[in-house]
Length: 516
Image (cartoon, rainbow, N blue to C red; front, side):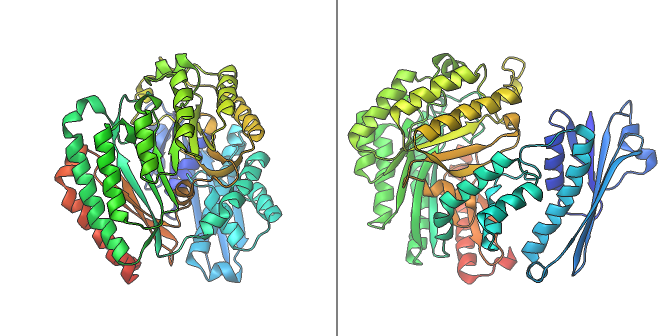
């Protein structure tokens, strides 16, 4: 079955596509560039009379937004329709960005009206379909709304369920000081190590299995160090401060000790005494850690690490392709505490194949026994680039109700652990249309995670598959500057990657973002 989407007035096609897909998760949702004539109505092709067509349009004058939407069946008959209008206040009229946000909101409200009436569904996140729902909350807070007014707007204008709206406001308040600390002369850095010991069933990240690339790891580090040296030295020369530094992957600690030491030494030499508030290294696979590597990280000033079990059920670890054991998670965690790390994150995933509420209880009880400083609770997302996408017949997805009850287990345990939510994001194709939430103990929130998801600070990213995000505050927009994903191609085209970054550094300095 297909659902076709057409925005007659142009613009916001992606947002309407995303919202429609929430209501029809098992249907094919496609965007039509033009409204089909009756003779070529999509429902009349073959035996597709069960297909649907969502049509949306809007007009915006200096004083009012008017939006309309209708849902048609495969024969072109109107099933439901909706029309909404909204007056523009002086502040909205005078801001292109505010006007654009209001148009999107009213248009999505109309589409939500017709789709909820047709399906009887009322999604937890209402019309908020993007990766970063917290941006809406911060915009409302920036407009001077109180917490109560923000909650009311989320529920009445964005149709967000009460508990999700409360989660958003609490999370925004817990991260707001860091979000507001951003400035034009402060950035964060990300360094990508694209190597893992194995590839997990659900993984869609730009990473490769180490065994097939051992002969080029040293060359890759050489290229990475060159990119860092040429770009970061220019940033520092221009007086740019580095707020946080994050080495991720892949699994950075999959590198051999001499390779890891060479990378950390190069970073240390490059920064040469610069004050970096937060320095994170992902040590995701506990089987890649030992006392020597942990001591090395500590000696080079790393003050936050991540040891990620994903689950504390051994049978699941074996099934999803992780070679470590539950016992290794526990032993490496205690080892890291012994070395002196006082900020350790752990990641878990809700909805892994074969798991249910009892599995999550077992995982959370074990995590609570370790008392990490951060806990990131992910909900399984089935990505196109993952092995799981092609194996759903073997690994059926957790039901939406079960996933939500598993998430409730996590929320109950994090409260016992004295943690609060500090960052949140969503992804396409998440089980149960749920969310990913980072929890923290007081004073231990990860700056990098907040800034990366907040998108109001420039993040310079290095290595194969790394994507820099250059922030232009005047337009409140992000320009992505990607590196190529393939490891060997990255090394071959290294100078091109460097030149691309240099161009954007010059653009930032000159304030000519309109030329992008």
